[in-house]
Image (cartoon, rainbow, N blue to C red; front, side, top):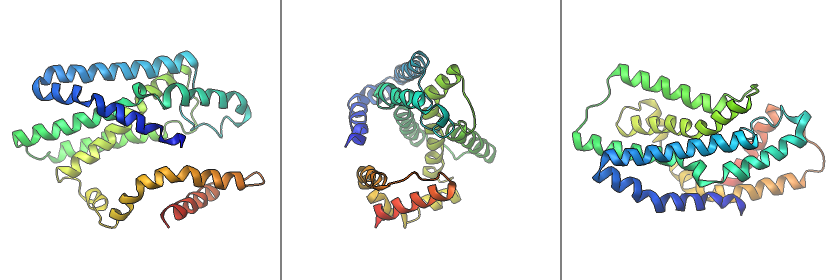
Length: 236
């Protein structure tokens, strides 16, 4: 169960979380400095490792690199070994979660008012732009080594900021239709199954792909069909 690697990361983040929580609670300025230091560390390690070893920006370029797949797969392996699994490269989103929780705590203490319409609209636009850029900026783009280094260093934390905004507006009662959809009770049974699905889904993937006896044509229709098939197996 190699995909359970993240449990080790999560445990390490949990163990060191008092370093952030206690300092924020007792000495806020020092707490912000500590979190800022860790942000600098995770940015530097992601950037330096990507640049030094010329690793890829995830696996989003597999199809476009098919003509040079041999070299690409070695760089992709380095991406998983050197960046993807390492806690010092993955801690950024966890720190954003800590900051968001602390901000909720301070808002409750200060009885902060709800955001005005201008601030709310601006926040949605910025959060959507950042999250969608992190998710789709690789599409049909050939990044240089420096651009790839910046992408690996910033994309996870950037996407986490977009998610943090959604959490913030929903918790403060300003999420509107987004909050109503995410709070829909039909999601409750699925939410109980997500971790089990996470543990089981690679087994289903492997069982399916090793049973295939010929090459498959890559198309949107095939990919959608495959996703729906795997979801059906997981949840039924």
